[in-house]
Image (tube, rainbow, N blue to C red; front, side, top):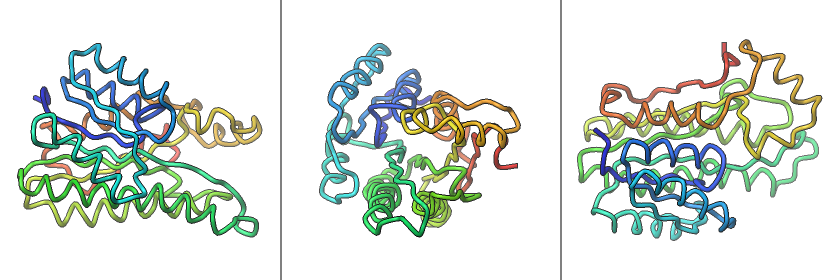
Length: 246
């Protein structure tokens, strides 16, 4: 049912973004993904997706900039004149206790995680409203629901993503567009692999399943929201966290 649809995935060169690209490619979805700097990683994602016989385009874009977002969407429209799926995945962390957190650290995380998601949804909404069809899936975080010491900027950005998800779901519901969010817990990515062992042990103790998830676990949730079978689900947040949110 998703074959030949077109998806944009932000931050698609590595980790969760790459897993989402591959999972949607497996469904026959043509892939357009953004990346910021790692050309080799972007090339690897393209290679892995093309194995499923789909078109794949990598666009170097800073999604905190409106002009870059517009360029990303223009490239996607060249495939078959429509954009069916948007996955807002691009994100960063700059952790620090609030007493030590620099204003630049706060702004950088908010701009990438929250403003970037807003800009891409703004671009997508104009296209999807005209199509009267669309699937928007935002990657939030369990931290945006329960908070975490040393991550006030990240928690604020991901909580904001949830608020935007619910608001825009209301705005677009009558236009055939669903808007949902996935809230990952501890996932094995480049962002978490270098955490101190003490920190990892503490996190693991809070996970009822007692192990970290993989990027593919998040990709499965994204694929579910993107499918026709999820047409009656909008404004929801699905925790993929091993039970951390219980």
